[in-house]
Amino acid sequence: MTTDLIHHTAVIHPGARLGAGVEVGAYAVIGDAVEIGDGTRIGPHCIIEGPTRIGRNNRIYGHAAIGGEPQDKKYRGEPVALEIGDGNTIREFVTINRGTGGGGGITRVGSRNWILAYCHIAHDCSVGDDCVFSNNATLAGHVTVGNHVILSGFSGVHQFCRIGDHAFIGMGAFVNGDVPPYLMVAQEKYARPRGINIEGLKRRGFDATRIAAIKRAYRALYMGDAKLDDAKTQIAEIAAASDDVRAFLEFIDAGERPLLR
Image (cartoon, rainbow, N blue to C red):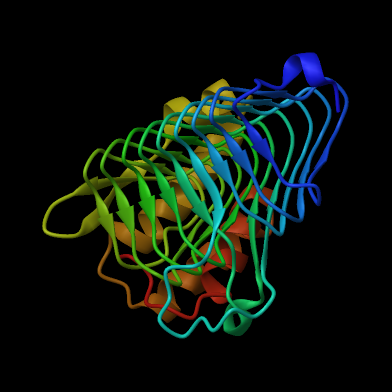
């Protein structure tokens, strides 16, 4: 720990471990069993409780509350943890809770995510890499979010839901079912599919052939009158020549909650 990078008003528990080049701002509190990787910057008035492991080169802005106890009435103080990867940007007043004993014990956030002001990631969630959570986006407990997912401002995701890779959740959408990969979801009373996330896929290098296959799978599932099992049969035929559609189908088959449809 380099003392000239730690503001004199910060409170660092003796059981915390800070890597090389870690900065800690004024009045921040770093608790016991917190590990912070090299080059991470902790803003003023942040609270980080443990057990929490934070990787390298993260930027955590003022008043964020990281690693707090889960907001779950069943929690009785059992040992649970939070793990955060590398290169994340976590803005003001973000809250990320540790896991619960009944939910696997760990909340995980991957790397290179942008988590903007006032977002909340609840206990036992798993967030992948390269996601964007716009202001006030909220995950209830046990939510799984894939890679390259965008949650627009004021969107919310019901507990135990899954959101697949490259999905886009529109502003104010309340998601109460699984969202397959590549979809773009907009709000009515509840979130409903509104096509695939074409612009996002293009930005990530999906060519016209790959996108066309995903479009065909989307049409089979969402634009006809076919029952789910019949739609899955059609998608399986498309998946024979498309790894992307195969991932789409595997996501659907693995669901425990009703599919958003």
